[in-house]
Image 1 (cartoon, rainbow, N blue to C red):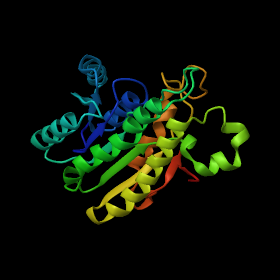
Image 2: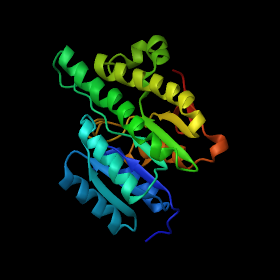
Image 3: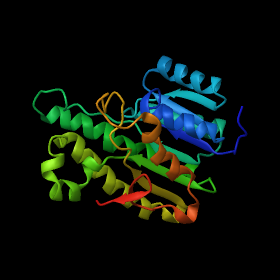
Image 4: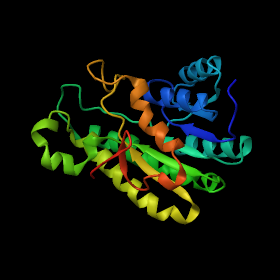
Length: 243
């Protein structure tokens, strides 16, 4: 077991891919990591895998769109830990890369998971984050939500830009900026992370980046010195991406 640092990190959508890898890296650094997932069996298997590697990891069932699940999560954290140091809003979906036309239902469902859920979860956990001496919220976003990139590099990014996904990530970036301002008085630091194009279920095996490298941006934002934290910015591997 790695030496614990008394910090609690919660990662949504963490039974596989980037979420689990972020949990692994933070766990090996001494964080107690809580992996959430809709499928409790998959979540338990992921946490057991991390425990076998020496991490202090737990799993909690969470449908990020279910208000009752969010309330239960907040109650669980309050009872078990009494605080929360790190929230990584990692859970996300893309329903539009299936070869079929985008429709309003796909857009609505994507916004629900990728934008509304991070807002609701963060709001629910603000009281616990406020009890931390170094609270941080990292919203897992994407350069595909960068309006500047879409405007200036459309010929390069248009293949990947979809209404629901890109709009949800652009909204998440604005949410990040708003939260960084409104939660500042509670000493909660907020930033967005772009992982890159990573080999995950969402990114497919065509992606050039391995999941370990993709997770590094979030891990750096969690662990960077407080006075170097890029408040209210979209970051990829230490560099700022324009809104």
